[in-house]
Length: 131
Image 1 (spheres, rainbow, N blue to C red):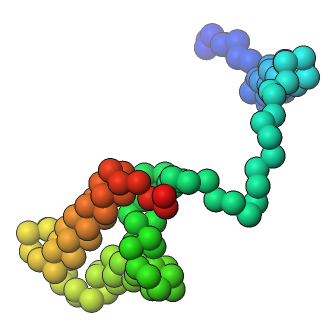
Image 2: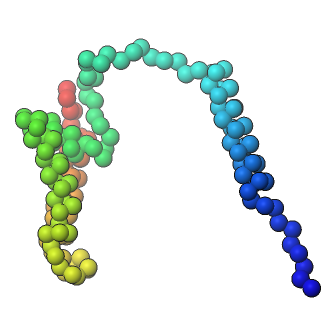
């Protein structure tokens, strides 16, 4: 004779328990937001860009290109062409080999692109942009 194991069903018991705990946490958050509101600063002026404003590090390379190129359309197109080149390499190099040592074009384009992006990011992090 097989011994029966006592189990708690997931659907009504665990889900309602988790939902109740989530509602308690949300309620505490709303109460804290009402009792201790965060003070607002003065409204931002939409027509004035702050001096020295920089994007996050992962967009800094594209922002440096945008700042360096006098024609803003080219400053937008150059990062798009760079990213597009990374997407186009697998279709341009039709090698069936998967090892990087046997795919010199793909590895060369990727390495060159990452070196350019790293150099531009470093350059953008060390200089004052927009000032």
